[in-house]
Amino acid sequence: MLERPRFLILNAPPLIRAAFELYATGKYSQVELAAKLYHMGLRAKNGKAIQKNFLGRMLRNSFYMGLIHIEKTDQSYLGAHKPLISKQLFDRVQAVIDGNFTVERAKHDFPFRQLFSCKLCGKSLIPEKQKGHVYYRCQTKSCPTKCIRQEPVESGVLAKLIEVQLDPEQHEYLAKKIEEFRKSYDANRSKEVDLLEIRVAQIKDRLNLLTDAYLDSTIDKEMFEHRKTALLMERRDIEDRIQDLKDGSPILTRKLDRLLEFTKSAYFQYFHGSLEERREAILDVCSNRTLREKTLEITLAVPFDQVAICQKSTSGGASRANTRTWDKLAEFIFNFARKAIREQGVKS
Ligand SMILES: [Zn+2]
Image 1 (spheres, rainbow, N blue to C red):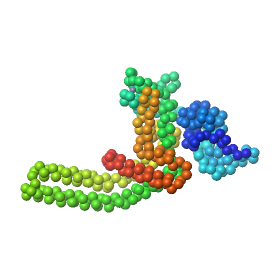
Image 2 (cartoon, rainbow, N blue to C red; image 1 turned 120 degrees about the vertical axis):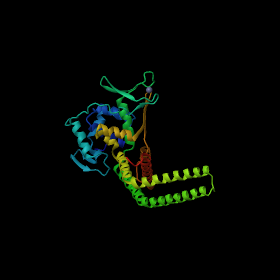
Image 3 (cartoon, protein in one colour; image 1 turned 135 degrees about the vertical axis):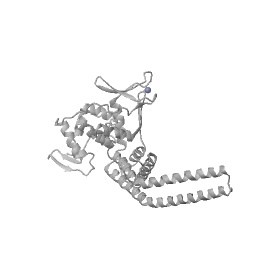
Image 4 (cartoon, protein in one colour; image 1 turned 180 degrees about the horizontal axis):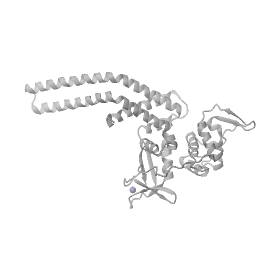
């Protein structure tokens, strides 16, 4: 008999992956994990939380890493389906189940310290530990926002990070496409610099003509100053753009690499990265991290909001229309990165 998962779970490959990832950390019992997964949106077919036994069977099922096990003969075969998790992760989960894996629990710094604020009064939420639970509390005594436990905050963050987690093929395609934009940008860069330098020369000529006109009394002082200022501003602007073009290439590459890295690993980073890496991922990927009374609000920062939309709208199949969507996303990310480094200034 094929050990295909009989207990189909509704539309949840990322959440099944999350189940393995979370369990592999060794921080959760199966009961805790089932509750957490429910919170993250995982539902059994009947719409309820999955049961512990069910979860236990799922975590033991090699189907998810691409192996089909035939009980009768105790043989395993490579399935034709696409594996959802790596063998490494599967093995780690087995070790946790078997008790062969001890967790070094991280020293309990508060992972969301200073990352969330109260939507009503704007103050940062302050972490505190009470009876073994971590809470994040609004500092304003009279504020209707009181506090929230760490667990729902973590679930909320994970739910966002998973939205920008791309499959390896999606990531590869996006990276390839962005690299194309970057290359053609680089090729056009020197052409663009030449054109802009011609414009600077033209402005210099116009400034000379303007000065002549003023000296000949063709225009009055006020008009002269007015036009001169406009021309000087324009020249300044163009010179900045030339400088950006000259300096920006390596910075742009780093920026793009960083953005792409988050779409590859922000979610996994959460489980395997250091506390700092985790906080960095949250800071970069999630914006508007607030609590309003009891409601947690997290939105994705640009351009990750677009990544999530693209991910959602193209899930399943790689049709021609999907390719166009991914191409557009690549262009969006590329332009976002260009704009971001221009705004930051290129000196960083
Ligand atoms: Zn408040």
